[in-house]
Length: 68
Figure 1 (cartoon, rainbow, N blue to C red):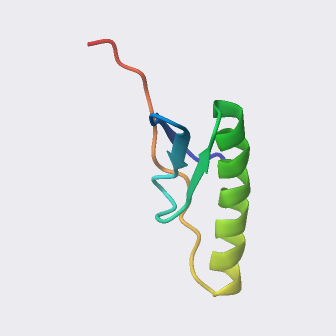
Figure 2: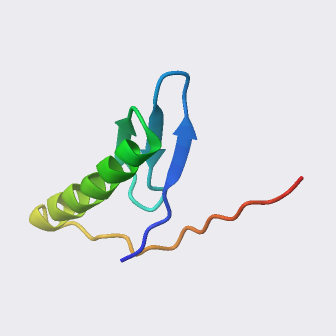
């Protein structure tokens, strides 16, 4: 599955979250590190949902860059 991920730059690191998977978050010192961390977080989050017998939300969020 292909989930939309939001990555934000903070003063000292990067953070990421997945709108379709509430609570699925990650942080990293670099963009590459947070991308790796959020991939791992998504896998871990989905495994946990399945183990608990909870539904896994299908990807539905979309992201687009818009020039203002």
